[in-house]
Structure formats: C-alpha cells, structure tokens
Length: 548
Image (cartoon, rainbow, N blue to C red; front, side):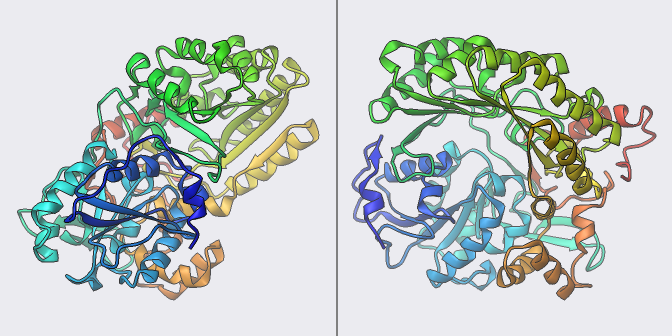
C-alpha cells in the first residue's frame, strides 16, 4: 500500500474529525486509483461522508487504499462501468466478506452500491449487494446513514427491513422473483412481506447547485483536472438514451450561485477545467459562462467540454475552446439518415452538422469527432449509405479539419423507449461496411467493439439469474467467449444469450426492473416507442416490437 498517491491530493473541502462512536465505513471504487479519483460521483460521495462527524470513511481502490478499519460496519461501491463487477467480487474476497448477500450474517458489514450502472438495472448484480441506492446521491446518502443509525445495533434482518422504508433504497433480498419457466421470462416480482414497498422509486435531486470536484490531483487519469457539472440529464430525449431518460428532468446549475463560485474555487488550485454534462451547451446561460472563462486572467486555463449539441457549435464557441487549448470537439449525430434521426427523436439536420464543422474550423479547432450508431431499430442499408455521404459532404465543406466517426452498436437500455428492442444481428457487418467506405476518404473510423456491445446488452437487460453466470465468467476471464462458455454450462437453468441480447421483447412481459420506477411511467415510454415505430412502420397495429 502506498500513501504517496494520497499525498499529492489537493482537497477542496475540509474533512471533519469523526466522533469516537463514528460508524466505520469503507468506500470503494472497483478500479485503480487513477480511474476512481477521476469519477466526479465517487469524489462527491466520499467528500460528503468525510465531512460528517458520525462516520469515519476510508477509501479503497484495486491498487491502493487508506488505512482500513478492522471491523467496518458499512462497505460501499460506486460503479460507473459494468465489467468492474469482477473487481467488486475480488475486493469483497480480499476483505473476507462473502460474495453472496445470502451468505452474510450479523458479523459482516452491510454492502451497498450506487452509481449509474446500478441505478439503470441492478438485477444482474443483485445477489452481491445488501443495499442498492437508486438515483442521485445528494439526498439518498444522508437518508441512508440516518436510517442505519436508528438500527445500528439491531440484527441484519431488522436493519435491512428498516432501510427498505427509505425512498430510493432497494434491498434485493426482500423481493422474490418468479419465472414462467427456469429459462423463460420473468413472471412476477413481489416484496416478501406487505411492509416492504412493492415499487422502489429512483430519487431525483432537484436543487440548482450541482456537483464539482472535491479533490484535484496529478495522479488522476485526467491529470489535475477540476470538474464542474453544468447540467444534469438532457432535454433532447433520444429514444435509446439512458443518460437522458434515466436522469430526467433536465436540470441546470445556477450561474451566479453555483457555477462561477465553483470555477473560481477550482482555478485557484489548477488551470485545467472540465465542464461536464450530457448537453453542456444547452445551459440557458452558456454564453455568459464562456464569457466568464474567457477573461484574460484565465488565459492559461485549459478547457475541456463534454459532448456538445450540434447546433450550438458557433464560431465563438470554437474560438474560445481553441484559445483554451482544446483541439477538438465531439458531437453526437447518430446517423447521416434523416429517417433514422426521426426514429430516435434526434432533432437535427445534415445542413446543421455541416455548419457545425464549418464553424469549428473557422474558430480554429483542428478536429471534429462525430458519434453515430449502427443497428438502430428500423435502419436499412440505404441509411448507412447516407451516413457515408454525410461524412463526405462535411469533408468537402470544411477541408483540412480532421474528421473522426466514432460508431457504437445500438444497445437497449432499461427505462428507455427502446428497452424492448434487441441488438441487431447485422450490426457487426454494418460497422465493417462503414469502415470500408470511410477509410479511403481519409476519415478516421473508430468502431466500439461489437463483442463489448453484446456483453453490455446482456447486462443492461439482465435479471437476477445472471448473478451465477457472472461468477462463472469471472473465473473464465471477461471476453465474450467466457460468457458463451458460462451460458453453455448453465444451459436449461437460465435463458440463453439470445433471449437477453437479440430478442425483441413483448411490451406485455414483466421486465426484470419493473419493480424499480424511473422518472417516467411505462405508459409514457410506450407512447414514445409508438412515435418511433410510426417512422419504422407507419401503422403499428399493436405495440409488439418488430422482429429485426
């Protein structure tokens, strides 16, 4: 264990001295320190705990840790990436805690998890956690600690029953899942007793002060970066997009009371600033924010901006960014086909994309990254041709601008209107087609691994039966081959890979997460699905997703 990584941290908050009777907590990030400390969610939760005098928090990463308590009462994990589940299991073993929640007794700490992966669909990981926090941590975390204090000395079962009463706290062991057959769909999900809520509601923080870094360090994956959350969620609501649907409503940080004070504070300790959010340029006072950062006193500041909305790429924005050491800009276009953009509700036209490229070049940026997707429901070969044509036209309109087309495979996500669609079996061929067409044009093509998309789809639509599959896979290694091997071994006990990944699900069937309520009710998601289908198939007879 090295303390040196912690020595180079500059804290932007003051930790409290814990009381003598403080609750010993280990707060872990299931990856290396450099990755974990770059997660804004992890930083904020850790600082929130470190500022409370009723808890004593120690951090744990896969490669280093602070001094850990001998008998922790609570062990928490912040999860940003699905495949990090392997590290969770490894860390639990290193702490001599049983991997399965059912094998733990009163002598073991309560294991909780939170973060985007678990809020979306915790079911594949349900067997590993006693407690899962669904939604924004701002209110949830404090309510969790307060409720735990009431039952601190009670039995594990009493503790879990009390915690289940807190809005947004999900206790998987208190819900029973029934299946039509061993390898069939979910039949029902019910609480084991009437005192447990039938539905757990994801928690939404509605304040106008959003998150900002609580620590700056050169040992972070983004060296010395200070991050400020400008917006939360996204008003665009592309039909496949978890970042929008799961985190609704769209919220913006107050410029005067939140953003400017936060940026001032951060720029006292570093000159690297990251503006975060799914759609940063849609902040209503974004131009005023840019003006603030453009002051001469911040001339040495290096600015990074998360993805921006295409029609907000002005020459002024490009100039500000290039003066602030940003070389490139990222925009999500999904496809070069107008029809596909209508299906996914992307309100954007090709001429706006071309204009964004012209503005980026005029403002001095060197490169433009466009993000698209292959295998979107309703996509046909001519839609791919239109994407190639669009890229050619951009190249003509802004010669000398380096163009990259990053492309992923459509993956269905829980709580979105496209949760009922499967992954298109032709997607891998389509990625290869785009590669073949774009490379000779001098356009860099960066496909996301198709195999990784398959694993992502499996985890994003999985149910509890996958916990045993994940334990097996961990022993085989995390390649797609390992998952296939594990499915073979469990044949007849759980559905096959195809059921989770490629099948279009009936809108009538019980979803693995139907007892976990996101921001929008299913009836609204079905309306949005019908809107999308009207472009695929002008007269949907009934809401049965089309078989691709």
